Length: 536
Ligand code: FAD
Ligand code: SIN
Image (tube, rainbow, N blue to C red; front, side, top):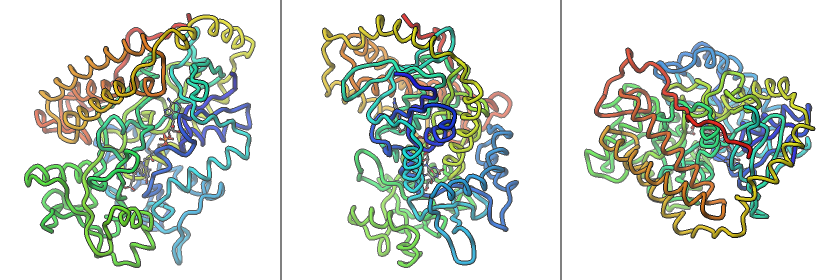
């Protein structure tokens, strides 16, 4: 298998890159489930862009930097906020139908940490509108889409990334897929937590893969917990999100006995940045011994709820709650990773031929905390830049790749596809995954402490070495590949969390409850020492 541009992931980041590079060669997008099973597809609130006359790009920059608590890369933030209005135009031209309002081109929503109305949206299903449009355009333009293909590891030759080993779930076989340029756009890590708004695909595969190949990984301690997911019910393992946009329209957080509480925590109340709101809910739950708080949107009235939030309304009805008449039980859930594969603002990693963008990359835009609705935006802007770099950079000769292919096929793939190895029992794999998810939720959650982090580290390293052994000695499978990535990703989060001995943004450690500007106004970067995956 061979192509010019190989993209791992069919979310907004991967598809944007694919559309850009398509005019310059063959493009293959591999995705581990159906093309639309992505975090992108579930995005609700929208995309931040300062397009209202009452708003400004400077204000978008200021809000992003403030929320990022001193760790944002100001150049990347400036670039993102400045280009945001163009992104809205571009998506509209591609066919994304953003919600309009009377007298203005777009209806603008409001979310936490934003000092103005600036969220462009498609009612409460913005992600689906973007995902569907981009998949359609990619198919029309001849991008090769490979569904149910799971990237296993990067192939490196002479320090350059020349392709990916992929697991074809149709054939149950690992194959080499060679390319001039490889983009990691594998999305987030929410699924390493017991409760998450992310779909099951979010096991941090690209981050784990890049780490194994020797790419620096930064700021994994900054896991964002969304304050409001539906309590006690799941859809395919994913918690239903109640968009922050509903608080933007006047939704109020209350304790079970009906008392609003956000005023005690922040003067911006329900519209404080997410870390503050999530910690406030956590604190109320601990203090009162309750399992959930209430999100009361009855004050919005039925017209606004049905008009602006039809999907949320219907999803709540399916869970037997009518949000027009009664408050919704909610809890925080793991939602987003600010950390990831270290890239420059052109999407380059430290390995020639390898790029990363979207949620799996760390561009420095979000710092210690992401401002709501900056993620789809970041994914698109930096995917464009990565595509431009990759187009200029894809000079490796195909003849060289063909030699590599022969070499690889006759060597180490045999061990992956060995018929002698037994498959690992599925319940062994699911038991490990559950233990990891529980551990992360209980000991590496919204409020952390050193004792629990150290215990979590010991446990995760034990699981990691057991899982690596199973991986080497058993027949490879989809679940086993994911489990190996999940445990690696979890270990990276814990390691970063232990190294940051302060509280900042999304990382709150009660043993160091203040910010330490002197020692920790910096990224925490991890890098594997034995860095090369050898070809033989
Ligand atoms: P994704 O869209 O997650 O795509 C990842 C892709 O990688 C998938 O196709 C997956 O199958 C594939 N993949 C993963 N591992 C492998 C592998 N090993 N091999 C092959 N393929 C692989 N952000 C906003 O800005 N605004 C919002 O309103 C908003 N709302 C959100 C609501 C929800 C419920 C969630 C979960 C997130 C929301 N976010 C929002 C965050 C935003 O949606 C994501 O950060 C963004 O969509 C990430 O895009 P991506 O392309 O990087 O990854
Ligand atoms: C939401 O709609 O609340 C999610 C927005 C985001 O994650 O940026």
